[in-house]
Image 1 (tube, each protein chain N blue to C red):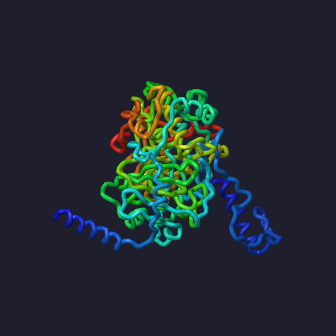
Image 2: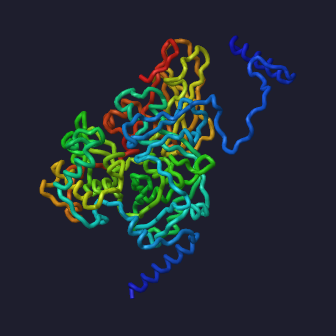
Image 3: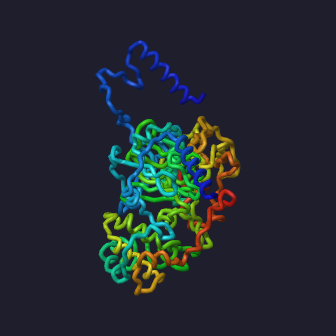
Length: 397
Length: 173
């Protein structure tokens, strides 16, 4: 045992013994004044200050906030720290007045109140949501300052709601229907088209997040939740679903959220989020590393199923070691990985590479750029490297 | 005879589907359905009546849009709307309505639902036709003397209409 660790252990046992004897300890002083009373809705400790990072914007139009992945513990993102991307601000919606309309190529158009939706059989799903613009800066080379700014447009929640196919069964889908056009009731009435097959598979109408009602910025009182697809198709503040024979080709699926290739053509309806991973600790922006034991920790996820393997390299990809995956390992869900490491003061290049259950392996930056060039903006999922310098500082290079 | 059999089959299908459902939800009234159905698809079937000219659009653009999109739609700072044709395969692609957007109906739909940014839904349909006409003319897609209406707009073919391809993943990177 390292001498410093041993000292810490001895001090710990001393404090425990002192506590049992009712004597003040060295480390954590005993409280001698009455604490705060119980409260109706809890707050985190006032010493904790982890925050979403807000994209600087001239107008509300580019509003995005990024989850503090470097601070995050476990796989669930607290609702208050879930990333945001809005196109016209967060509306204030009275749930008693809100309705969801299903119409178009259906036998019976139907309108549902929130109360109606809560009567349907409930479905629970823990899954990540990732904006397809996550890591967009990295297309042009290492650009993000820290892991929050490179990868913070992914978050993971436990969602509660209704399977969309249950609603569609009430309406009766006509055979010509191939797409659903989803519309939100924000000021931009954001509109996206969803393939019917995905709607009938595992798409949710979510009204709950992490055990309570959705947060306003996550679509209160209702949102579409399309597991594994790019975040913007999980339309928030959902008010309308129209069954149609073709997509509506809205601005958000033509002008935006299409991926420009080097030959000048663009990929359209690139909906699935490919497998991706990132080391969240050590990572840039965190305290300078002390020499000695350092656990490499990170998150991996895939829109196409479970993460089956994460490898970590400390030498810039020359050698890879299998990291430990920590359960639960769920499909389309953030998955925790760790690898023990000793920082001995030598420069290191940390990287992680994940594989999902389809056999897909997260690509290198060179491979991704060779296939797609650097102007496609969306869907950057390459291996991310952090450089550790002799002084223990960590950099995105 | 044949038609009657099909009718019976269809009626049976409807009854069965209903019987399998939970009976939740309410039938919307006709006005709700009419008002809601406003998203404009590429065929333009949902386009409203009305018309607007390039000249009217130029005036409206100067009043309502230029502050964010630039005096001619090329300056920004918010999304550049005009120009960029022939730039998509270059190192500095400029994705505008004229160089990139596959359908003109999307221009009408987006202006009507989301613009101007701080007052979405405040423009009358005639004004939206006029602005759409102005932006298409500024991009050289329609002549300067165009008066746009439902039929004219639905018939516009955008320069980059064939510039899109389906997602090749996961077969290709």
